Image (cartoon, rainbow, N blue to C red; front, side, top):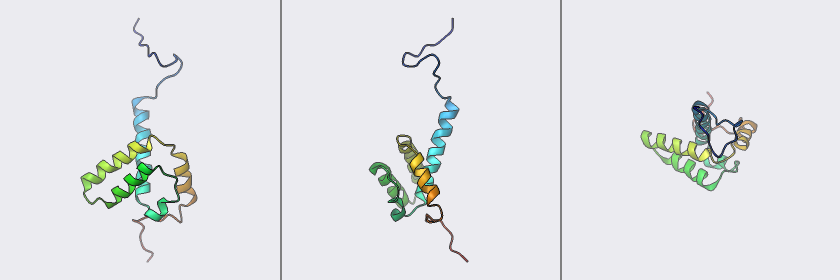
Length: 107
């Protein structure tokens, strides 16, 4: 027969598809991009791991477009190791208060 067996998984447990894993990674990267728009003082409201906070602050200082793109991908990679729910909840709770760097001035 043509069945592949994975030793660490139960037969009824299936791994998520490649597309599902990619969608999840992209959503975490977009969440990281939302954090990039916040000011350093606003980032203190979030309980971010030190490595992630350092990466966000460093990315905010970058000016090169290519370096910024690589840094966003790195932030997305770091986001995979943490639970995004508290960050999303804090963003939702403080959305009006968290006008970021790119917020337009009222006319």
